[in-house]
Image 1: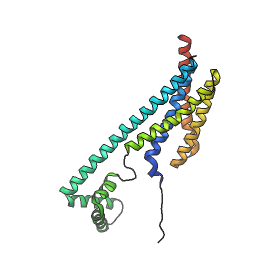
Image 2: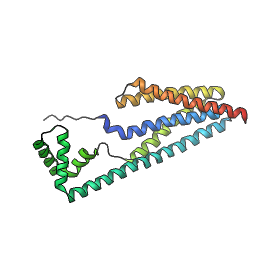
Image 3: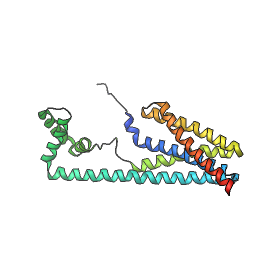
Length: 230
């Protein structure tokens, strides 16, 4: 018997979403901070300190935010799981009919729907109801720690590039180097994220470049105005 193994994109959606969001935010926020402070004619040490502080604070913030957000989703899933378990204990026949009704709506004949419900409930009643009634499965289940670590690590990696540009360049060249390098990296990240998710690469690259350029342009304008006034 030949085994047919498949790996679908949805299996990566949890950590991939957190990683892409973290890297994108790391590039945009750190580059914007550096460009804004540099546009205000700040000292080199102030620019570097701002970049390092942005990297550390951003990575921790992303980790905490992802953990809290995904933990909320996990708590909801656990509450639904406990409720389904109680309903199966208290009213198994009603749950059997409910599952069969779901299969009838998907196109099965009534007798076949009831037969499928019986077999699946015999095998794993709770799993069948979680999957087919609530859409909760092992593939899509919330994983708070995984999401938090993926976000923090990817944010730090994304923030490292604009910080490296700030170490290598000074003056107006610093602003140009940070802006160009960040936009190129954002384009690559957007294209890779789109490719991994099965979407058009050009559209994925364009949307992150647009928002990145907008963020850096806004902070550069604010920094320039602040440097003139202060």
